[in-house]
Length: 174
Ligand code: IMP
Ligand code: MG
Image (spheres, rainbow, N blue to C red):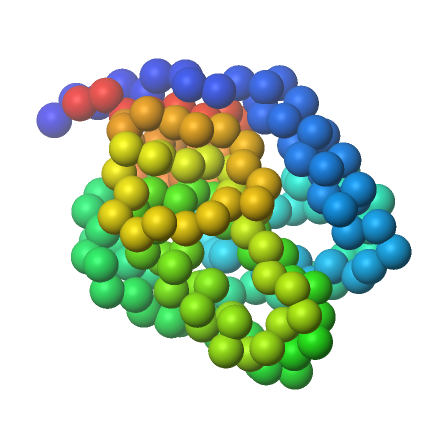
């Protein structure tokens, strides 16, 4: 089926929002060292661009979980790349995610990382789709709320694994 990509949020809007989020994070973590845990693959783009705007001391870790088959959440989480407890124990941990959709993945990640005894654990997500929520999760730093559309671009891929590298946030209209 033919599908076209509509622009939802421009690169200029993303850059400006990232600047605001970075300032907020720097203020909140003053004098602390942040362990930023970037959730692969989607949040790699957001995580890196946000990090470049941070003035705080940051260490980077990556985790990889997946719950999607095509465009539908399976509800079951696969932990494909985990993080050692020593990297989290007693640290100020900030999860950097691309989107909180049903909330299943983030709920899992929060519980999973909490078990590794961080000193603090916060969530930064570029997008949230509140209309799709099944599990309630608190987002400490949120970029944008988006409508119930299938998002592509700026890290978000489609069912074929494509369109992550579009320099804007769009959605697919079928
Ligand atoms: P959740 O567990 O339903 O909250 O899904 C979270 C994960 O699904 C995110 O980390 C994304 O990787 C993926 N996802 C959710 N919505 C979209 C979308 O609209 N486009 C692309 N990926 C999405
Ligand atoms: Mg993801």
